[in-house]
Structures are given as C-alpha cells and as structure tokens.
Length: 244
Image 1: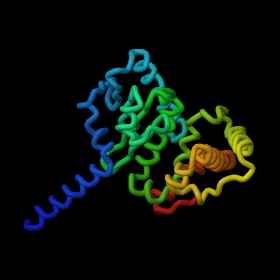
Image 2 (image 1 turned 30 degrees about the vertical axis):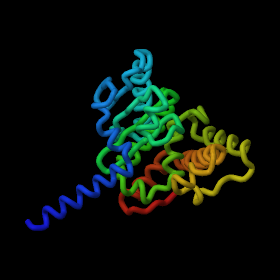
Image 3 (image 1 turned 60 degrees about the vertical axis):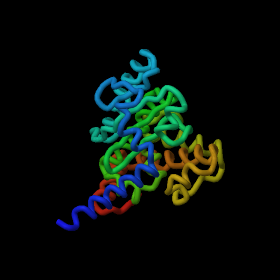
Image 4 (image 1 turned 90 degrees about the horizontal axis):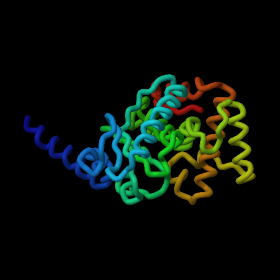
C-alpha cells in the first residue's frame, strides 16, 4: 500500500508533462466544452459553421467511411472528428496551420481535425486511414514500427486528390507518371521513415514524398492485391516486424 501514492503521483506528473508538451490533446479531449457543437456522436463542428458546411461534412464522412470499409474490409477506427471554421481554431487543435486535416493519435484516444480545405471526402478518408491503421496496431507499434511513408502511402489509396482511377494497375502507373514529371530521381523510401524526413524539407519535397509513398504502396497492390498490404500490417501486429 505504501507504494500506491508514489505511483499515483508519478502517473499524475507524467500526465501533466504530456499535456504540457501536447496541449492539443487536452483541447481535443474537452472539445465538447469549447465553442463546438455535436452533430452526431464523435462529430463536432465550430459554432460558426454554416448549415451547408454541416450537411456537407456528414455527407463526406459517410463517403469516407465506405472507402475505409472497401479498402480495409471493415472499419474499426472511431476517431472523433472536429471541423474548424477558421485557421486560428485549426492551429489550436493541430499545432500547425499547414494541411487540410490532421490525425492526433494517443494511447487514450484519437481525433481527426479538419479545416475548410478538409471539407471533402478525400481528406476525411485519408485521415480515417491513419486512424484505422493505428486502431489495428495500437499507438505504440504504429509510432515505433510503421514508417511514415507506409502510413501515408496507404492513406493515399483512399484519397483521390493526386490520382482518381480506381484500377490498381492504372493507379500505380499514374502515380509513377506524376512522380516522373516532378523529379527524374525518386526519393529513397528509407529516407522517408519519420515524420521529420517526410514533411520537414519543404513543400516540393513533401509532394515528392507523397508520390513516392503512393507509388510504392500502389505498386504492391497492383502486383499482390490489397492482401499484400494486410499481410504487412498483420506481420507488425503479430511479430512487431515491418516487412514490405
């Protein structure tokens, strides 16, 4: 019994430090008490959002959920979705003003934060894929074993902003063509393993990173089907070993 208080104190300190370093997690956790309204369970919108935006959000969430189910076989992820109607709100939750959406995953919950540019099925499906992978593997394995390029590449299979064709072979060829148009020298996958390597070197590098990742994943699917991706995920889940 004498160890209970020190343990509880230690856990409290860890929690406080975590929230100090990642304040967006706390803000996401208490979104229901902020200037946001609940449209349905796990869906919150800015109080300043219009009726048209709210209707569109629910429609696009439905489309995105279907894409997740079609690709993954079923949907296990249930991240809370937060729609921000201005850049300041988005910055407060995502800790960055860049991008149309972000996924915040933690051991205690996950959230998908969207700005106005994220009000479409592609962005929502992309972020849902991140949450789906983390839900299937757990936060720790996703953070420590899955390279960023694989996570982003898989998410782009549900996201038609770069390539719209659904045929697996044509999709692979289209990604390769897009990448070849931008750069004759492809990026090395092992240099895109972390978020810093993937996103931290400018807009052009990030776009090349996306196309490189999508080319690798779509190529795997073109030759082995989606089961090849599921095999990689299962290997990480069962043996904590990434093989691609």
